Length: 142
Length: 190
Image (cartoon, rainbow over all chains, first blue to last red; front, side, top):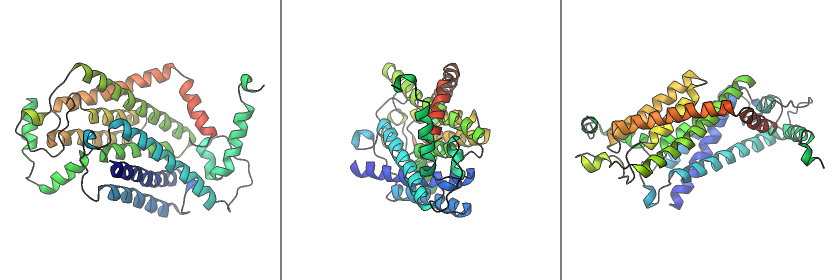
């Protein structure tokens, strides 16, 4: 059970990082890329997705009922959500560190991911948090 | 009719060993659900413009809520009805473990159809691909001997129906969905 659960988390974590790389390369969100050139990002993403699935299914199809140590739907859902979220945070933090030298001198916009074409996540985040603080509801302003 | 289709499809087992190996992976509890969930993750990040991204992210939220409420519908139906699995009633070559819960409706069909219908609302190409994967998933379960065709069809109908209901509700509770996306935008995650 623990091995299956652990392997499932690794499958989702690796393949989520890969999917995010493919998606942000397609979207042109260059400050979220580990590798600057989109073709390399596609290749890295695809490799990570395949690696995740090969890791998980290397020993066979893993047909284990949830009554005998398999993961039930709720457990899968929770593990998927946490692993995918972890992969998102790993991506934004790692790419902020990798791309920190190519800083933009303009203030990030409040357009969400759109701002990550020109700014790393950690460059943009303070702008978003400041705007949230300025627009906080009256009951929080006391 | 239902049983005849299962017997006919399942009679192909052992004819092409490589096909059986592929079906064992597709019908797996982990392969297709993870693949379809990864598709949603990719759609969340993958649109090329801000406007298109917001539309796609709404579709992802709709699909996720569709899966959640679709599963709830399956639990409720399962509390009132029970249908034995095909392998209990037919002489079949099973390609999967022996599930003990109700065969009707097929939960994987609910999940697959809900994700596909959620995407179809905003992107016909991705929606078609997802419907293709969901159909393959459902067909594989019949081939593997764990679901009847009507279980899969009912599951797909529930998945699509729940997504239509979720879409309707999300329109009625505006601006709440917009606020959720705008909050995620302030954290640069949407």
